[in-house]
Image (cartoon, rainbow, N blue to C red; front, top):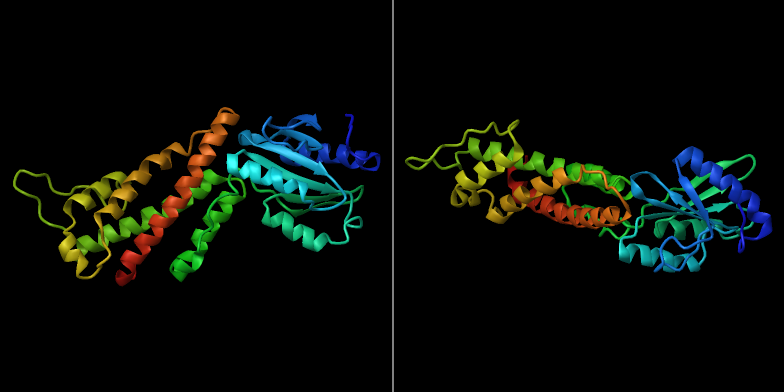
Length: 290
């Protein structure tokens, strides 16, 4: 391990940082002071591979934040590049503005770790910068009883498990659509089958979600339903039906960096659109107090 740019008094911290990320994060195949991508200018002190295809970038420094990291963050976010950036400090003594700099680091999605001979403290964990560009949820637009679940889904997404974050939102959407289908049927808002047409057969609460939505869209009497739920639209049911496909796709593990970028780009879009759809479903079903 040799460094051209790192100050000599920080070499020991860099060595300790590599061991820390090997032991605690399972990082492999370390490189030193080289760009992680030809189009991204930063040459981090250390870089390595993490599970799920993410790239670990470690900048050893005496300060938790400096302006040169902003360009790296912006480039990764705009290109959906799956890097996790950490700044590693030997202590907080060399950073008189540590509290303010830690706040800036958190707002930009990178982590800060204090790593000395006697201490290993993660002051802030990193977010994959390919996910950090996510449009944040306006949580006050959701019913109070649903806010915790929605916020947990977003936190899970941003904290490095976008698949689980998306699936959590899908589960919330599935729950409200099944509850609405049950209630609307109980209220008598489903039409009878036409002559020669097979009537609804799927078990609404346990049957395949896609089939429940198909029968809901087929048999719901929208005119009758609008007397109680004026915001009901066919597009709400169609939108939920579309979600049943990407929900299955998110389970596939990416095979390389290119696939990670493609997956995370799609996941950001899916999370945002599903959040919008879920909010519309909650607004539509508000009169039913499901």
